[in-house]
Amino acid sequence: MPDPWFVTAFGAHYPALYAHRDEAEASRCLDLLPRLAPLEGSGPAAGLPLLDLGCGDGRHLVHLASLSVPVVGLDLSPPLLAGARRRLGSEGSASSAALVRGDMRRLPFGDDSLAGVLSLFTAFGYFGPLAANGGVVAEVGRVLAAGGHWFLDYFDAGQVRRELGTEGAPVTRARVVGPCAVTETRRLGPAAETVIKDVVLTPLPGREDEADALGVGPAGLSYREQVALFGLDDLDSLAALHHLERIAGAGGYEGEPLGGGSRWLLVYRRRDSGTRGEDA
Image 1 (cartoon, rainbow, N blue to C red):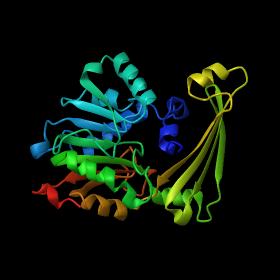
Image 2: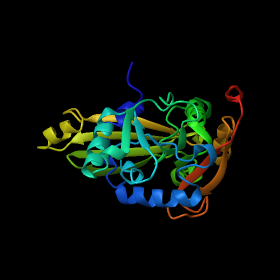
Image 3: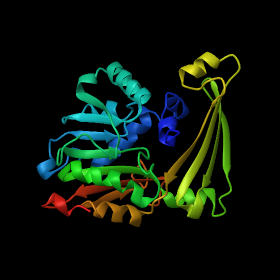
Image 4: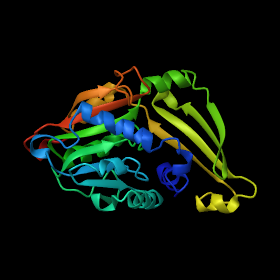
């Protein structure tokens, strides 16, 4: 049985493919979030650790590591975690952030143990339709203490649908990324409930060894990303099942209103639910 798409997509080549998503962009995102809600949580959550969920190669962690609370980065990808380790070490902040390999659907943290969970740069929606992603939200609600916050950085689904069009015609981009030629074709999935991206990487002549170091062999690498397109009502309803309520939002890293930028920056607060057995 082949690996799920996200195992292949988040390989050693991923940082090169998204090199334009750099630490400067991460800094803009993290400068905005405290204007929406305290990163360190409030009430019982104050001072507890902060989790970067789907931390990748650590571009957000290097900024979070300067906070006064403990910070943990979790990712499923060994190559990206290795990159995060190198990045943190080069910044002299390795002692300020722990790294854990794990699945976001089964978090290795206790109930009520975290002040905040950050799902940044669309680190959400990988597992199919709305209900199939409920396990992630349930885990976020479980590990957050009352007064803790889930920060969700997700694409503006309405804008994606408008960009790709109701007819679902594919949009293709070709570019060179390091030692590879890359072709990316995006389109809407059935009923516009997902955005699909077919990615093909091919080693450039004479640069096969460099490409191989990124996990792109002589025959190249191809895979299909498929990320769910949830509306705000969908996200709010799913969050509410796990005692999370939206308290703030912005439409981009500059603090634009929702719908006025290219992304949704949403903040959900963990309510005091009393009994854990009440969770759906």
